[in-house]
Amino acid sequence: MKALLLENIHPEGIRLLTERGIEVETVRGALDEDELAARMAGVQLLGIRSKTNVTRRVLDAAPDLLAVGAFCIGTNQVDVSGAAERGVAVFNAPFSNTRSVVELVVAEIISLARHLTDKNAAMHAGVWDKSAKGAHEVRGRTLGIVGYGNIGSQLSVVAEALGMQVYFYDVADKLALGNARRCETLDELLEVAETVTLHVDGRPGNAGLFGAEQFAKMRHRSLFLNLCRGIVVDHEALRENLLSGHIAGAALDVFAAEPKTAGDPFVSSLQGIPNVILTPHVGGSTEEAQSDIGRFVAIKLGDYATAGATTMSVNLPQVVAAPELGEPGRGRILHVHRNVPGVLARVNTVLGDAGVNIEGQTLSTRGELGYVITDTVGVVGPELVERLRALPETVRLRVLDAG
Image 1 (cartoon, rainbow, N blue to C red):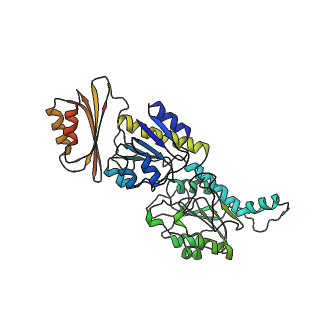
Image 2 (cartoon, rainbow, N blue to C red):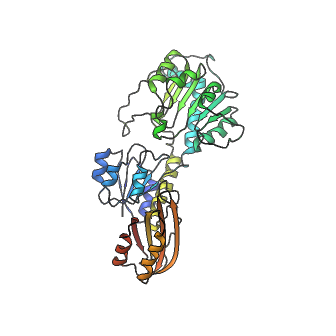
Image 3 (cartoon, rainbow, N blue to C red):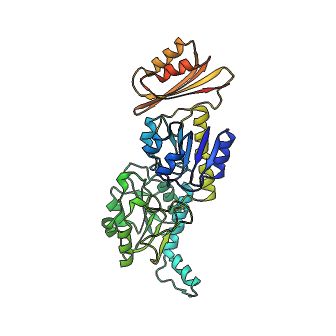
């Protein structure tokens, strides 16, 4: 079995896959659609981060592909529905770098409130600017969090521990942690928050979420941060509000167009503006987070490849599977199918007609798909496999053999 890992996946992930007997090929940076499609022949497992897009064309060029691992939080760069249609599982790491992002947000809020980047630049230029003008504590100030998911909610707790008053807005009904207060609308949050930070996902509906209209509704001399997705913010509108002084400072870690590899040139209209922090999409890039992500996603890919487990898959029905197939002479049939009545009965009829005894069976459904893992006693030969594959509801069929 072969895995192709792009974008500097942490060595921990490579190690864990290699220990499973999987051949691992690595690529330092991202690949565009043409490059990736050309590399997919014979690849069963694909590992990416945020810059590589797994499109339908890439999936069409990957008949052997079993699973995609997004070694990051989001999966918007993957056509998850197209993968599901082909029985390709998609996994991500929704929790592993949460703390790293939260810590960077807090560091940047404090840095902006104290104008630390400007003070630092002046010192490097030989200017001793010992002044409290424009510098503020964050204690007692109001923080508005847009998007109250894993990152937003943890940020809420940490910010409150610093003495900040926390407000949040989310399109879903989320439980407020601590003393955080929920806002019914984004406009309501913008009226009260002195610092606004965005933590929404990259779904198409969030593109352009924050533009000139929203900046105009923010409080005068407030702070703005975006560490979620570059497409969410209109950078030209932000630039205008920074230059006019309406926004006192900003920190951005994500951009609509980002360089593919480290060392490539970067250009932004926000460069050179005082009290603006620009970082190269490193919110989750700590050694601890990348090691945790590498370990988490590699285990999910390995468990699916060698045992069929889909726990925490974002697009296939979730089925827990024992890691061991048992003694020789036993097998495991992994059957992804369309979720219509009677499929399980037809599968079992085929097995019964072939004299294969079912030792254990687990079924789960998700939307239009079903997934059943069947542990068997008896030989699952080529003829039986073809009969199962020929069922009209079959999407993807794999057979694992204990030897």
